[in-house]
Image 1 (cartoon, rainbow, N blue to C red):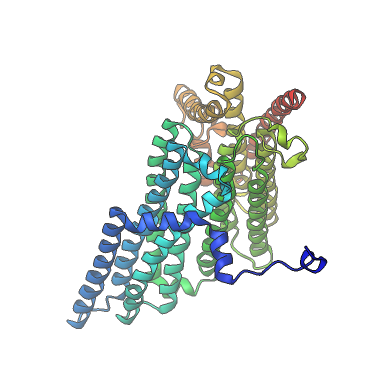
Image 2 (cartoon, helix red, strand yellow):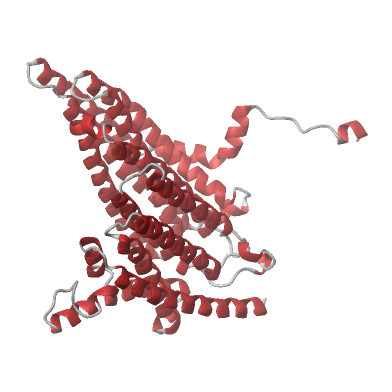
Length: 477
């Protein structure tokens, strides 16, 4: 080889080939299998039929001299797309990932060099192709609803964007759940979780669509409503983006250290959400009740993250012994989760307190509940007979048992004391009735601080246990 050839620059591939190489061969396989499936043919045909019937019926009713039917037509077409893109496609994506788990073909894909990132990316892009086809098919019908009068074009575009972003989030979440489901029981429960989550969030999105369709002009005159309509889709995209490395990490082999990308992405995303909320409250003078609502939503999202963090495998593979904090293992993932919960309580609590908001306690209590019961669940999974099921399953079952006991015990004590569940002994530790009281009542900062202190003690105890466990694993390696 000549010196000139040795220093020659590598050939730059055309843009199309680079995109195809990034997407991976799995995308072509999954797209072809999906488009040839009977379920896709039936769903896509019904989607087109419903859109055509809804718009045609609305046009005929409008021509007969009645009031404009644009809002009703928009509701009908978006409902059809919601069933397709927010229920069927996520469920199909979940089943595609579960099949890889059941047949253990994902191991072969990893060993062929495709990697866990390639598997997750291929599954997601294949599902998004189906979502894109459905959106492209329904977009003309949605735009025709604007021509039927009664709804603005801006409302139509906001509604379409909202539904597409939610479809992306639900599809990513379904893929992540499928990747996390290792046992048959987890996969069976996962089917119901995907369906329930799709129905719940799909119903909420349709409620917002109705507000856009029938009260859109009033909503667009409200600055906070505009911020919500524009901010929540961005949050959906960010959260869906966070799920992907977590799903790839759950598919990683024992010799791979794949947890750090998920931790970093989750950390930066939640930091962005917290900072964005604080700026909107302090600089743009948004309503402090919005801050309280976002604090609760942020705690719920961190609850989902923490549920998988506390059930991560302890320790780390030998190959990752020198990776520092980037190593996989329960300790480092729990540290990230608890750190974000503490940051949420401090940031949102400070904003609410600065404005003398009546529900400042809520911004402290919501992350404190999450931290407390995640800690109790992990302790039950480590120091009770649940440990025989394994650290992963034991921690998950421990969380559900701790939550159930946290609801039942204070409620029974309140019944014995002949008091309401949200006023009886121990109500402040009740994750259900306690949250109800924090939402319904104002100026409970002392109770929230008590709850936060107990949660902090439980968190420190858990971190000490995990540190000792991690030290033993380090010494063994």
